[in-house]
Amino acid sequence: MADEKTMIIVGEGVVRRAPVVFSSVGLGSCVVVTLYDAKRCVGGLAHIMLPGNRRRTTTQVFSEKGRETRGEKRTKGIRYEIPSPEVAFTVLSSKGDVGLGNPANAAEHASLNEVYHYADTAIIALLKEMVNKGASPPDIVAKIAGGAKMFADGEHYENSIGGRNVKSIKQLLKIERIPIVGEDTGGSHGRNVDFHLHSGRVVVSTIGGKDKEI
Image (cartoon, one colour):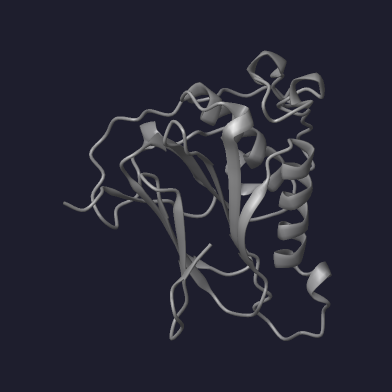
């Protein structure tokens, strides 16, 4: 029996426990970030559109003291972002009947005033929800896909939306000491992503290309 499939569209983020497959399609300059705790089979996916939201400031999720070694528990060192202005936070639900190709229902998505549109707030929100669902920060790893430069306009990749998305996400994950263990970014082609929570596999597909596991 195939695992339930939940579609995550641009500007959305979801955290669940296995078994489930998260799917995002039509990635161009957008970037999908997956976070996974293999010991507890807790995974999250954010479909990020832009590098940053200048209207909101954030602090780190995990304190420096809590990150001294990956073998230490960092939960005690958590500090959450302080959004400005303060807005409501909707806790994700692991319940719900979501069919193949259908968007996850509203109760399964975290909404912080379009928080998942932006890399700087999406990473913070996804990490918070991972911990809320029982993930242990030292055991969380990341994979990223997308960030293409879709138009041949002479702009350097680093200055394109896709390039800036990738750079921003990598910097934010580095700050939180979340290692990137798989990556398929750049290029000029679109991507689809499937994230299998029972195994942690992330499969990237392209039109006319071979599937690639990262």
